[in-house]
Length: 133
Image (cartoon, rainbow, N blue to C red; front, side, top):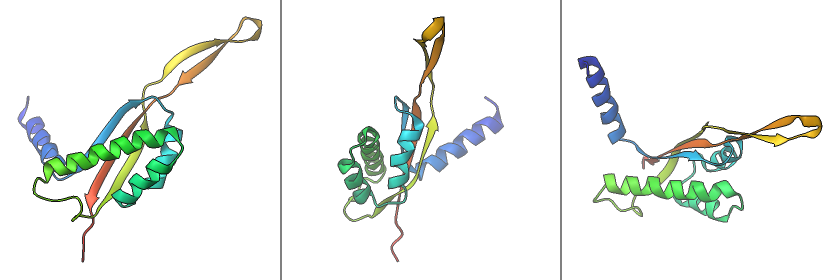
């Protein structure tokens, strides 16, 4: 590995030490459906976002709830002495990217075949502390 590449890698590693995040990859839901719930919890307090996700009937809300709990656990592991109740955490960023697609064929009339695309997505969730004044 070259010197510049190593320096950039250590730089990125240092930036990640200050961020508290969780990533969900290859979730078998379409990105459009996942973005509906992601837009609802973006910018919310963590406790309020958990309540929203628990009460929502959508399938993607269960997966996002688990992801948010994972991000909270990552925050707790990086802040050993701090208590969750004392800090006010909020969902700083959440974005949904398209994942890989499984391509299938469905039989159609007159010997044709229609293509079915089974979509998946990648979700990245970043939480941060609210600065108290």
